[in-house]
Length: 133
Image (cartoon, rainbow, N blue to C red):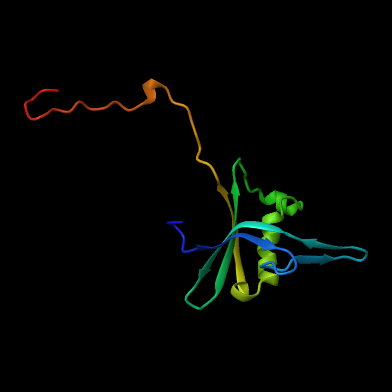
């Protein structure tokens, strides 16, 4: 957050029907239609000096997640990108006329590790006013 001008705008943003914040993305084929619905963990926005509103979709992950471009090429792990483009296409009100800026997987827990007593830093002995330790 310190290295970006994006700011959180919404948490748990719903994509769906009947009064939800963003209308679902509808994909229509010859004999079938599909609607994308879901809940976005966080949506960040940034407005540049020209008034363009950029959006970023954030997904909190308690486990590991690595973004692989090859997954996108093969039609895998598209959820975050579909959410991003759904907001761009169907967003109204505060999400009208937005520019997709990216997606971010954010760790929801701090990494832990193990250390031994030898790994702990040694404390320096302090000397009081009388020269005693």
